[in-house]
Length: 458
Length: 159
Image (cartoon, rainbow over all chains, first blue to last red; front, top):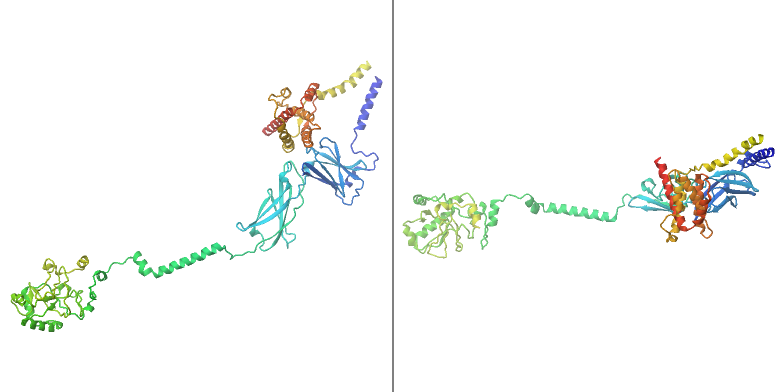
């Protein structure tokens, strides 16, 4: 029993000794303070070559003599306990697929097989993404901006897929005046108004893990891209727009000119029609006589005509009284004398007599131009059958059916019969000896001629 | 008299200490927030399942009895995953591709890294594990592991 108890005691003692602190130096040359003499830093790059990962470590002090120094990683590895780094110049790296990617690993610096300094690291927390590449800048004239696009290899990776990108750009002549923009996608639009016109710019981009599980450092900058911003041309217009503007201007000008030119003749009568003028309407409506007759109601055109005003349809007595009166109008004096003489002779020259109704006095008398046969052509007193008149039983001025016939002066050719509803009597001189009379409408009351009846006749 | 007391003093307490872990089979899952599973383990499980789809055309529909005995029951999810992780180790073979073996190892060791438990392996389960080495069983096992992890994450979100 004593022996058994002693054995147990020794076992416990040895257990305590064996399970001493790790990193205990046997030769005692290195103290805890000297662990900081070889500070180092590492970063990992996952799936850098297919499914292979890369872990790189370097000493922070570049002057460290790393001749006999090694790096080793233990823990969080698949199927192995530890892996040794490869050395290339001053850099230590390991390329492997055997990272577990869960849990912490221990990276130690070893000198001749003995661990000098160690640091606990998690491979997924020291991820340094690969640098973006293929950065391009395209000017979009329609949007007045610059579209920046770039590519990254992490879009096809399984683990580190979500990254935060930083785009930096500056004007080349301003070396340290960099502008920075952060984005999670691979496209960025830079507004033209925020850049200087006609200037040379440099642009580049880098990435960092933007993940709730993977963390790390900024990648290296992508290769720079240079582009020039266009000049500001304020007066430059789209050729199509310019053509349309010019054509529109000329069209509008032409329309304005045509409107002004045709205003009075065409546009105004349609827009603001004028009330018809009776005089002008009648002139337009009346038929023109075949033989150069000018119809006119202007009193001035009758200056050369013998106008005898009729004060109305008078009774025979008054007519006789009038006839006995010698105060006849001057233009008719000669005519009257001739007529008187004509009456006394057995022959009766064919003459024309004019009867002008009272209503025409002062108004637009029938025009009777010299040499023209017009509406004012008078009754033709019968000459071949004086007995008819003599049947009237009177000498001197002729009276027919109670109407006073006043002789007129027409030396022209025989007039054509011109029918009227009322007011005018015409005698056709072609049938000599035969008085041709046209009655004034249906009754003597219809001697007044109105403009409307003329219009209606036409 | 002295010999009897010495035996009880120095013999029994160590025995109790040794037997204590055997009696308790509580496991603790460290990755309950699901980040390790979603970003690492699930990628490897999906790779394995996608690779095995071609070779699992003639698998039987019935579920092996071992899954009825060891299921992802409530409060026993960690134990199930622990056992499943150990079972996965047996499927690492030389004739598999390197990529396949690596993902198998990542799922197995990853889960063991996250599960802080050491239940005793009984000889019966070891025999069963040695029997089940077909790809059909591996496929079912991986599906069960996925389902159990989803259950754990769903439960942690509700809490």
